Image 1 (cartoon, rainbow, N blue to C red):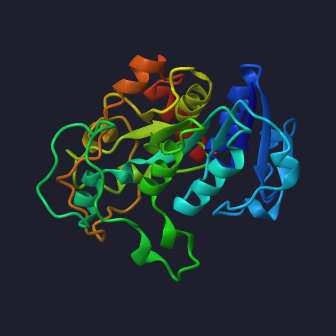
Image 2 (cartoon, rainbow, N blue to C red):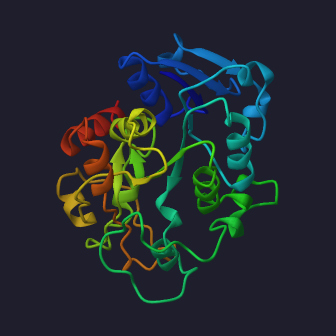
Length: 292
């Protein structure tokens, strides 16, 4: 397969590239050229300032090529997702876009933007979405800040709404591993709520799901939750972790009675997804990198 990756030079991206290469696929990276991971030296790159987030343009040299799959690692909202679908209609067989669990109404319950009672149980792909858009706009310093127009719900609508170009949406968990969230602050900071659950995913396992979504024939037109199964509670995670000086985060006005725990059975049953790296092994790699 010929695969185009938009973004893909930081954290998750190099793992995605490596796994595509290990399977014998031809990979092209489109990005600004600000980050060049060692892992990506043997991959063809197209550098262009248009690749800054939000990615609204694509150079002629890129649009002259055809791809079996386009993996958009950094879609932020409606405009950039629409631009990608327009650009690759007739030039690609599939677009895979990374989304987030912040699309769920339960996330709005957690942050207080959605009124109503706590939603019990696991979040599956058909669970209700937020009714209040732009979850981080209040944090934006200006309308030019990427958080101002960030909205993964609109990303999903654009990616899945094109009749002529099939799309796949992956709702990622909180990703951790060497290079990002390696201090596991997203666990330690919530030690005061040991029963809370938030689905995480080790970076190599998340990368494997992305590659699978791009290559599996059954993935087109589908939405998949990605992450561990089952999701441990904070207390269960802490039982297997060393002590940490990371302070407890009691400043955020989160309703931690609301879990953000995914049902990931769809990607497992439909695409045969399974973790490449066990939970215990992923923690070992992460902690070893942090302690270097």
